[in-house]
Image 1 (tube, rainbow, N blue to C red):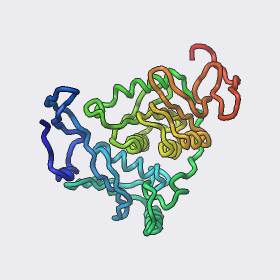
Image 2: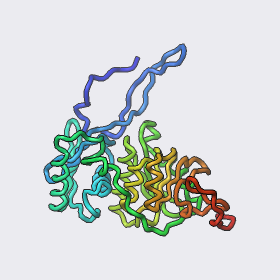
Image 3: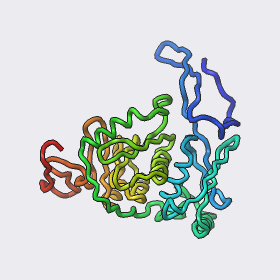
Image 4: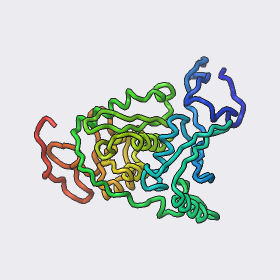
Length: 301
């Protein structure tokens, strides 16, 4: 039979690896057998600004500096990654603290937000004070990027092969940033789909790549928060292996972002701004409109 662990968090949680071996009992209709495999770990990660904890989230304990930068930018805590100073990772027995240095004026705005949160019932999102803050309008993306569909398919296929942690655990999400020709240049994994994307955006901010010259691929559904995050840094296309939500479609439409769902093999649904992808024949129609035939590209694209 599988070994049982003591209840509660592991006292060494903050110092652990992203995956650990665990035993289990495999059962079917008639038999049971002992087995072993890797299990993804999740740890509490506190984001600390100016000696104050802003939020605590569960995350995979890898690429934490990328997570710190990406979260700080995409949540609007700073206007640009260049405003982020030192990042200190402090490990504890039951979690990790990310001490992130930002300008004093940004700290003050964050403290004002925290004071307005006092006494309110939260909506479950990171440090927002009201529904209007949760579903804030996405930034308009002005990139002129367009890609061949072959680049989209290549990126999706490559992501399957680049998920080393998920290959061990089958329990984590992945996000990647691809160049216009579909080459994956940054890949990150996490138990949280938002965290995986924040890690990619953080890594982009710390690199020399121009965010507007590539696109994002994720292994989760395309929710509105993911659209908000890519819009914040000017990424013009996001593709997901699952379908998007209706709110994500509306936000992407307004922000000028091509939103792709059900990216699997050599097929996908393009929900918004199909002009960003070279498409033969019909262009996807908007609701209550007839299909348009005004966007045709030569064969071979």
